[in-house]
Each structure stands twice: as C-alpha cells, then as structure tokens.
Image 1 (cartoon, rainbow, N blue to C red):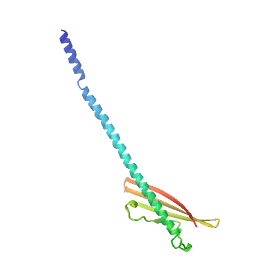
Image 2: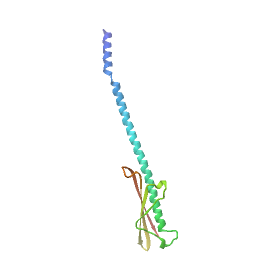
Image 3: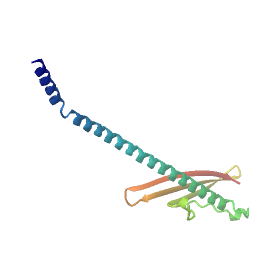
Image 4: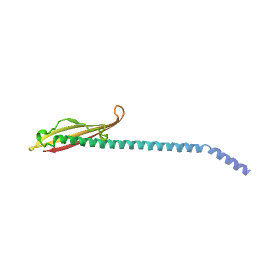
Length: 151
C-alpha cells in the first residue's frame, strides 16, 4: 500500500508540472527578443550620430573654405586697396569634391572704420545635406564661422 501511495503522489507531481517548461521557454524567448530589439535600436542611434558627426565636419570645412575665399577677395595678391571686394552678401560655390557634396556656403562681409583703421567682419555659413531632402530621410547640418580682419 505504501508503494501504491508513492506512485500516486509521483503521478500527481508529474501532471502538475506539465507545460511549465513551455512557459519558461516562452519567457526566455520574449526576453531575448526584447534584448535584441534594444541592441538594434542602440546600433541605429550610433550610426545616425556618426553620420551627423561626419556631416558636421564637412560643414565646418566648407564654412572655413568660404571664409578663406572671402579673405582672398578682401586681401588680393596685388595688395592694392582698389582691388578689395567686401560684398554685403554673396555665396561661394564649393568645388565638386566628395567632401563638399551637398554643401552650399553663404558669405556676408561688413566693414567698419574705427580709429582710422578699417576692420572687416566676414561671416561664412555652410549648409550641408544628405539623403532625400524632399522626403523625411534627410540629414541637414549648419555651421557658421566668423572672421575679423583689419588693414
């Protein structure tokens, strides 16, 4: 009789445990799915940050190049004051190179006379864009450089 009672108890325990491995398996799969989706989201954010950093560097280089071009017009190689050009508003077209693709530069120049010395303020603003800017998958970056020069 003792043997029959232990077999009956054993059968009851096995019947009560049926399906628990399935519940644990589903729980583990769900947790792994959530961890994988979080990792994918983190990697996408990282890629976007790298793209913004590269575009920011391109825009800064374009703004610096535009300021250099404005300084070259302001202080020409001839050294003559009559050859100086300080336009209130103009644009500079970057060369057709990979680093400047999608960039445009606008320039402003103003001159001020202070204590008999002419001072020039040059502002170069570069806008660089990549992607489909007509849609919603466009990355735009803007950098501005200000340069002060005098005679």
